Image (cartoon, rainbow, N blue to C red; front, side, top):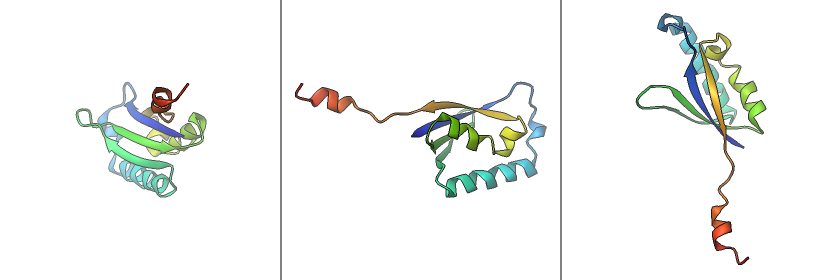
Length: 98
């Protein structure tokens, strides 16, 4: 199942908490998840510079499990809102003979 994960910074977290060390650890873990096929695509939203990930997971529970391994999530600096996706079936509805 494809799942969109959109980063949200948590209230009260200041920019000084995003140290070079934790940013590097975050990048390393994201790269590991990308190499494992969990993170399929990774973007930054243009205006707010927040991460938008496309995940391939069995379900939302599995997605949450993997996202919880990211250092910024572990340190409670960010969280992710999840949007599970299903394949589009509109064409079959439109063009079926029923």
